[in-house]
Each structure stands twice: as structure tokens, then as C-alpha cells.
Length: 70
Image 1 (tube, rainbow, N blue to C red):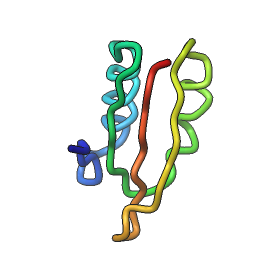
Image 2 (image 1 turned 45 degrees about the vertical axis):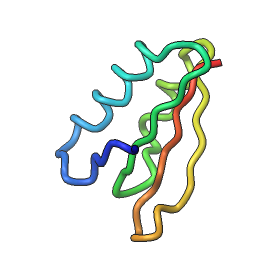
Image 3 (image 1 turned 60 degrees about the horizontal axis):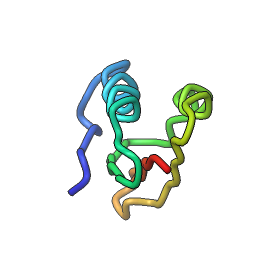
Image 4 (image 1 turned 60 degrees about the vertical axis):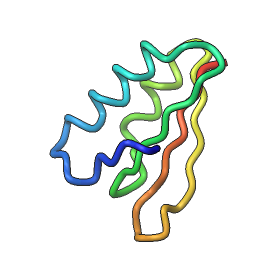
């Protein structure tokens, strides 16, 4: 079940996603619902070894982010 971060104020959504990315175990996935595409977060995630992400439209104007560790 995705974690809904749409009502959280910045920088809390970014902090939550980064913390989850750091503790994510190999072969697992976390999902987050965001109000918009998280452009400032992407360079930070790109620096993390083995962390991959992808996005889908959530259907209500938001974005579903899938975060996984290889």
C-alpha cells in the first residue's frame, strides 16, 4: 500500500523518501503518492547505490513513485 505524502509540508516528503531509500532492503519496493513530480529529490536518489525509481500518474492529479533497491 502506498504511503500518501500529498498532505505533508516540505521538506517532510523528501526527508521521508530519503530515509526509506537508505533503509530499503535489496529486492524490496516502497510506494509513495506525491502531489507533483519530485524534481529536487531525483539527484539525491541518483547518488544512492542500487536505488531505482519510476513514476506513474496516480489518476487524481498526483504522482505514484515506486522506489526499489536492486
